[in-house]
Image (cartoon, rainbow, N blue to C red; front, side, top):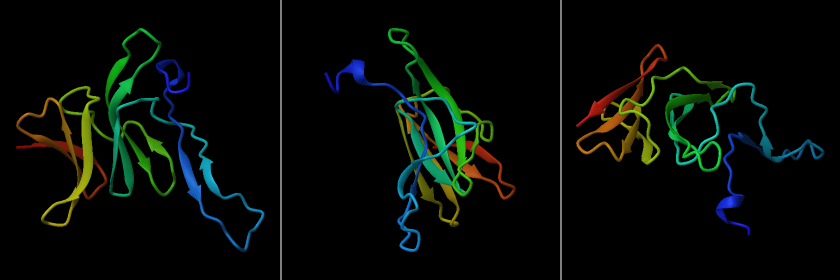
Length: 144
């Protein structure tokens, strides 16, 4: 039936909300699927947070074929929020290895810099911080 495990599947669709334009009554509006030439693979149990005009999709679980157990992921894909284009190799992988049981949030440091703070089940004495340098490169550090 609906909602049973047999009805669930993973997607990697991307949607953009296009607001209604009173001057263009015939124009489409609402949630529109974005055509993607490049995109991260489908996944469940992932997180996404923003940094420097990009959304970072981190880790997760790709269940693959039923009964296989799937694969836990360690990748970080970056979505440019202006162009809606993905960069799949623009950030280093998760430092503690593959994870799907994690949370992330964008936080502002005391000096006004935005960083992504990530915590997973292996972070017993630290969190992971993803920051963006002035040149645009991103890097991880462990924070006790």
